[in-house]
Length: 235
Figure 1 (cartoon, rainbow, N blue to C red):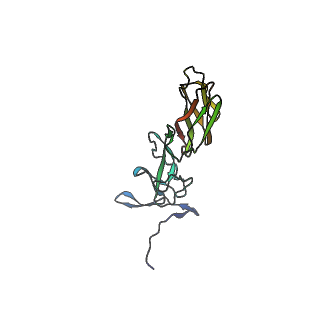
Figure 2 (cartoon, rainbow, N blue to C red):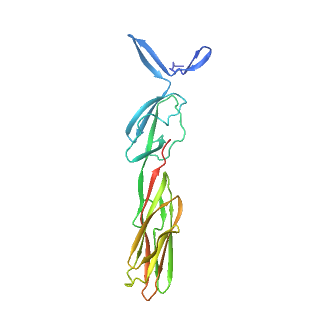
């Protein structure tokens, strides 16, 4: 059987086994490190090395002292493969070299704008609706869903527009987000907008129009933008 080298991890001291973290040899008046019982952990942001630390076997490797500050981003956690967005929740040093990759999340992202979904990972559904009245009141609605993902907050800015069908301003309209009014009484040819905080899950846009005469009144509700912010930070 061929000779093999093995790393010594424990020695007997005072009748008890004790971990050996590092091995040295002495030469020319100096100690020289031969090996380490700790893991040499390299921390990366993509291809950029953030730092290297030695972590004792069995100790946590997910909370290094390397500087993880990145302007405009929040550290969400660490991954064992570059490019993945799934963080490792628990990981300890094995005694062998290890590599970890930072997962950064941009602090604020616009996921919808001008009635258009920009990122279907976060938003789905309809972002605009209209109602047309003629000697009556008409109502319409639209539904959409927010998936916050790694974010904790979301905001929507919605706008209500009425057509300029009645120069006497007898025809009116209004709109709402999740039942909360943007404006209750919007005269013909006018517009109004409002920003709302919204959460994860399903939401609704409501719009109504009333026509008191022979002029039809149309009212629209538009999504001007939806933004997500305040990423979940790694602690």
